[in-house]
Amino acid sequence: MAKLTVQDLKNLAGKKVLMRVDFNVPIKDGVIGNDNRIVAALPTIKHVLKENGRAVLFSHLGRIKKEEDKKELSLAPVAKRLGELLGQEVIFVPETRGAKLEAAINDLQDGQVLMVENTRFEDVKNGEVVKLESGNDPELGKYWASLGDDLFINDAFGTAHRSHASNVGIASNVDQAAAGYLMEKEIKFLGDAVDTPKRPFVAIIGGAKVSDKIEVVQSLLKKADKVIVGGGMAYTFDAAKGNKIGNSLFEEDKVQTAKDLMAEAGDKLVLPVDSVAADAFSNDAKTEVVDAEAGIPDGYMGLDIGPKSVKLFQDVLNDAKTVVWNGPMGVFEMENFAKGTLAIGEELVKVTEKGGTTIVGGGDSTAAVQALGVADKLSHISTGGGASLEYLEGKELPGIASLTNK
Image (cartoon, rainbow, N blue to C red):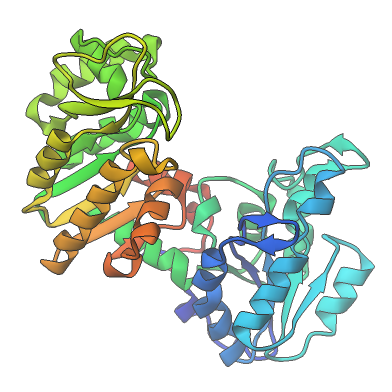
């Protein structure tokens, strides 16, 4: 890897090591719904502690749009959960700057951990939206950098596509800015998949809108042997073919784009050949399986890929050596329209068992493999939805670019 990694940082003992982690976890009434992102950061935190460093953690949580949001979006419950996972106290400071925070950091002992309050509290001041964190305010980045000993570790791949004060801002104001273990792993798996994949290389792109993922589809068509498209975005392609799509979600302004993509891609682009259509957006709706060419009748909408599409996609994946999957095949939240997404998850396990590399990114597809209980049977579960998409598009991510070159 061309950037410094945590292993390259020497003599951490007694040093205040600033770390950007991604603890943007679901919290309701102070209870954490899923601690996967906290667990994912543990190897890097433990490394700093083992080396007798003093870890100072920064993370955002949700979006702060008004002063009242701060009551529900404190990192206090996260600090408590992290302490439980580490088996030691995590000092939590409910401030993002000031004398109280500075004193707590200066009082840290070797092997201790301190967590700063939600970095996005800096986006609203006295009721006014100022976006100092998410706008990468230069003074804020410089201030946060001054709290440590010129050492910064970025282990938050999920925010690597954003230029914020807590990642790019700090990195730009220290001598050594390195990738943590999680960041390094993300770059390795996604980088290898995009740059030097074992072939056949198959990309699976799902989700609701063509507009959200058009660039990644275009990029992957140049690199992959096959690109499978499913989910709501497939109905824009159906409309471009002239197929009836009933009340299915589609983007009229992207129909021409879909036509152009199909003409350019040829048989590289693999689209669903049937759908599970419903007469309402409800798990209890009346359903029927319809072929794409026959069309979805008026009053019905496609909410999942059908059995023929599942078989088609399984055939494409059968001899794959590298698979990247981002986005569900249907309305995964509803049990009756989750079959297509779950079938893809099961097929990826088979690819992995045969020695292939399987990478899953995006909230819904990640949730699918977790629901199946197969997440640990795949090669890599990416922690960054938007970041992994932009990486696959070939874009330079500011959070990575700002790290120190070896």
